[in-house]
Image (tube, rainbow, N blue to C red; front, side, top):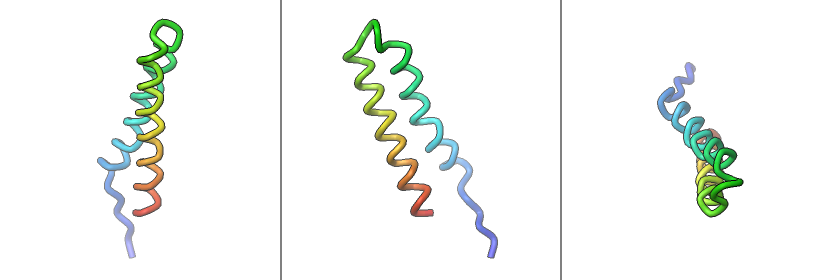
Length: 56
């Protein structure tokens, strides 16, 4: 049986956390409140990516 993963879903589950971690490290000194929001979004995206990978 061939396992065809959804490449779009894989790319999105990889990019969402990256788009949260990068601004976190850029803004953590200047804007700690915004950096905290970016970090929570990245953590949430990472958790969703793991759940998606495990359910596939």
